[in-house]
Image 1 (tube, rainbow, N blue to C red):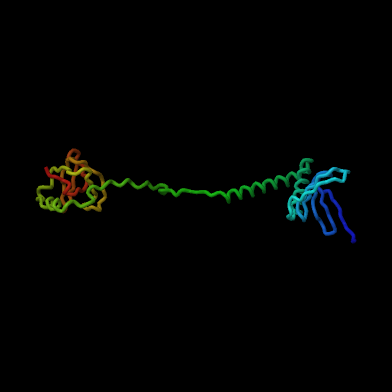
Image 2 (image 1 turned 45 degrees about the vertical axis):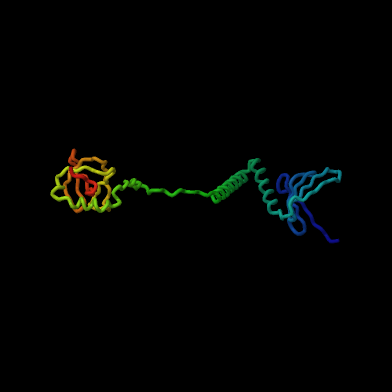
Length: 222
């Protein structure tokens, strides 16, 4: 039977470092009768009656726990030293607390999914205007166009005309691709200013305001 070496060193109140011939083997917390041992072979708890020789031991974990045990003992030593007024221990505890808070905040940000709904319109750009229903987008029947084209041109300019269709569009150009400026109700009275093909420039009979181009099939000369 060879020589064995075992020594227990107090590193903090209630914490001892157990050293054997192979080096540090475990860290023990507590006092006689109730101890928690964290070492190379895992974590073990022991409860007994001092002086009776009776005790109960149970392995809590089988993983190596020596390094966590030393860290826990060091933290315990810092807490006790800070409570006794040690300035270095207090500063160290504050730094450790800040580091833990930063780690928790970083982990929380990494696990948080932020969903940003895309803006429908860019800043400073007004939303598109609601399109005006185009009642005359479908070309009128050919007989209506022919009848309008057959009317003498001299009968159109400076003549009073009336809108014959509900929601007739007034356009910016004599074409179906011209922008719809407004809609005129059925029965609106207009003055024909100019004729170009199947289109006529009209103005309001009351105010004299030039409104735009209207397809001749939507007009009836009075």
